[in-house]
Every structure is written in structure tokens, then in C-alpha cells.
Amino acid sequence: MSKIKLFISSVQSEFATERKALADYLRADPLLGKFFEPFLFEELPAINKSVHQVYLKEVESSNIYLGIIGKKYGYRDSEGVSPTEREYNEASRLHKTRFMFLSTDDSSDREEEVNQFIKKIEKEVVRNSFTELSSLLQGAYHCLIRYLEENRYIQSGPFDAQFNPRATMEDIDAEKVYEFVRLAQSRRKFSLDDKSSVSKILHHLNLSKGKKLTNAAILLFGENPQRFFPTATVKCAVFHGLTKSKPIPSYKILHGNIFELVDIAIEFVMSHLNFSVGTRATSAIAPGRYEIPIEVVTEGIVNACVHRNFAHNASVEVILYKDRLEISNPGSLPLGWTTEHLRRLHNSIPHNPLIAHPMYLAGYIEQLGTGIEEMYKRLEEHGLPEPKFVQEHDFKVIVSRPTSQDTMQDTVQDTVQVKNEIKELILILSGDMTRTELQERLNLRNRDHFRRMYINAALDEGWIEQTMPDKPTSKYQKYRLTEKGKKAKEQWKK
Image 1 (cartoon, rainbow, N blue to C red):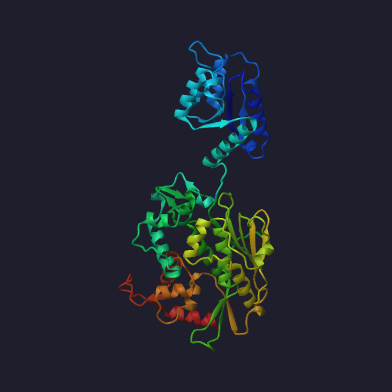
Image 2 (cartoon, rainbow, N blue to C red):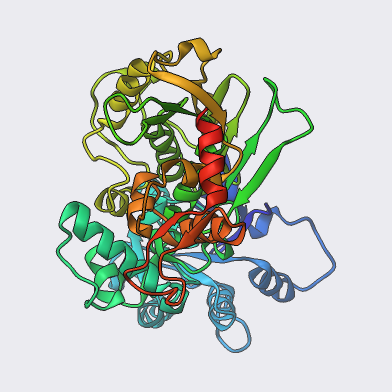
């Protein structure tokens, strides 16, 4: 990244020491020195050009003009204008960012031309005052930090709370907003309903201000969030071995809003885990379970997608190996926390609070920091080791897979490898069931994905059929197994 050129100007016979000290200060500062390159006229080597041409050319090539005004007006050209005012005028004409620092001298102590110059400055820019070198340095520091913040070189607040200068309401998918509202009403008794306007809902969630949209609004409800944040994706992969080595049996890069990324990533993992069917000893429906509890998979993926550092160029990765599930994200624990801190009950300190709250309202996460505790509990009930948390250049959660089928409970008789979503659907389908019942039994949230990858795929291949085929879109529609589906289910159960 090329540095931001900062033109520092004052009357040559005044503040020479201060200008040199300011330039040295900026170059030495660990933060500002990374971004700014100060320019002082006296540091130029001798060249065969007029002074007038050189300093105006330097103003043109600079990003910021910083002027220091005191008592003296300095040299006047043939039109009675000083070089300092010429520089300021050129910076104004070119719409450069201008920071003007005025000494606290009384106007009666200034030359009259200086007072007139100050009046012009006050009409055009906000002036800053200083009494001595230390206050000049402090004032310049605050102005330059604000410049970096406003131009998005650095951030002073959470990334998700920053307003996105390119986003408009046209980038928001209204149906996704209303789908969220209906879900939040049913799970957290959300106060607004789907009769409210999209703008009112976003404002209620602190995701907008007037026509301005936060990054969180785009990530949660955008039609195409990756247009704004190309790496806000989830990379999912399956490896038969213990390392990342070819061939790769399954690999997907997921796109969409955060709700969709979470839903589809969870479904990707669950569709590649072993699924066991038990006996009918205690129920008319044979119980089934995955080798890793879905609550554990969900907690790991939700945390990775919600708490990641979106300013980072890396993506969330969800990788299933022969012996483990690894979920990593470009993020870090709160300052002062260690991975050991996660083992005990702790407060929830979201990295992206404006994203975390809607995810809580939709039932994806808890706000009390109980998710990790629940993860430990579920793994213990499943007879699996505790999860491992690793904080290096990224944050990683590692969950072990069973080493053999002996680790499954005694009630489990037969285990089948679930190769795709259709098998999951067939194994839980009993009698006539609605789409909602099936989706809830599979603990899936994304309706469109469920319909496309489960219902439609099973219908197309003849595994299931509709109870009302002549009215395919009826709200009373149910689904049942075909003879083909029944035979496959019986075979897999045996």
C-alpha cells in the first residue's frame, strides 16, 4: 500500500522547528508512520524550477494539506499573496483534505493579512488551535486518526457496525428480512411482525440509520453479500485421510447471507457423518443419531461465522477428516482470554455484536455464553472426547469422530453411511408427513435449501411421492415413501 502524502505548510520564517518536529513525530509513530509520508518543502533537493511551480505541484500530488498559521503572513508575490495562502487555495481548488492549525495568538498581534486569511479559512474548514508544540502534535494526531477511520484505513468500532458507503436498500432482500422476522417471533417473541417495513425492521435492529446500511445489514440480509465482502464465504471439504490430501471427495464454497452459510454448512457436515438407526423398543419410530451431535456441529459453525474477523481476507473453513471435524475462522478470542477460559461459564463477548443479536433472535445462538458448555455436555453424553480449541493465526475448534463403531450406544444395531441428503429424508419419513414436519425432524432451517436438496431431489428420483400430486403447491400437501423408498429404508435398517 502506497503511503498517504501529507503536505505540511507554514510561513517559511515561522514554525520551521515545529514543522520538522511534526514530520519526525509522524514518521516515528508506530501507527501513523505506516500510513503517512510527510512532505516538507525544505527537504527537497535543489532543482532547476521556480519555487512557485514546485510547491503547487507538490500540493497537487498530496492527499492532505496541513497548514500552520501564526502571526506572520510571509513573503508576498506580485499580487500580494503569500506562498502559504497560494498552497491553501490550490488544495481547496483540488478538493484536498485540509487540516488548518492556528496559534492562539491574539488577532491584534497578527499581521492584518493573516487575519483576513483566517476569516477565509473559517468559512471553508473547521480550524484547530494550538498553544505549543505538544498541543500541535496532539491535534494533528487526532485529525489524522479520524482521517484513517473515515476513509476506512482503520476502524475504531466493530466492523459490523460500520456504515457501508456502497450499499443501498436495493441490496437488501426483503423476503429474507421477513423470513427472519417470522422466525424471531416464534423463537424469541420479536416485537415487530412481517407487516412492518424493511427499513423499520433494520432500524429497530440498529442495522441502519436513514438510508445508510451497516456491514451487518448486508451480511445478514443482503441479496449478494459476497459482492461487498468476497471472502465472507464458508469453504467445506471432506478428506478420507488425516490430512489435506487429494483426492478430495467433496468440496464446496458456500455463498449467501450468514443465515444461509450456517444452515448449508451444517447440512454439509451432517450429510457426511455416519448415521445410526436403533430399535423400536421404546417408540414406534426407530431412533437415530449422528456420530457427532448436531448441537455440537451447529455451535462450532455458528460461532465461526458470527465471531469471525470479516476484515480478514480468509474464509471460514469446515473440514471433515477421517478422525475429526475442524472448524476454523479468521478471528481471535477477546483480549485477555485464553482457550482455557472457554471451559467455564463465561459472558458472551461477540466480535460482531450487530450480527450476533439477530442470530440470537432467530434462535441460532444464546447470549449468556452457554453454548460451549452445552457442547461439552453433548459430547460427554455421546461418549466423545472434549473439544479442542486452538488459537494461532486463526481460531480453530476440533471435535473428534468415533474411532470405531464400538463407541456407539448399545441400543444402536445397524449403522449406515449417509451418502447424501436423500437417505436422511427416507430414514425419518414415516407415514404421511408435511414439509414442515420433515424439516423440523431433520433440524434444518433453510426452507429453500431443504426443498431443493431433499424434497425435490427425492421426488425426482422416485424415493418419495406427494399425497396430493394434482395440487403440488397445496398447503395441505404431505409426502410419503414410494415402494422404492420403503424397500431402501428396510434394507438400510437391516
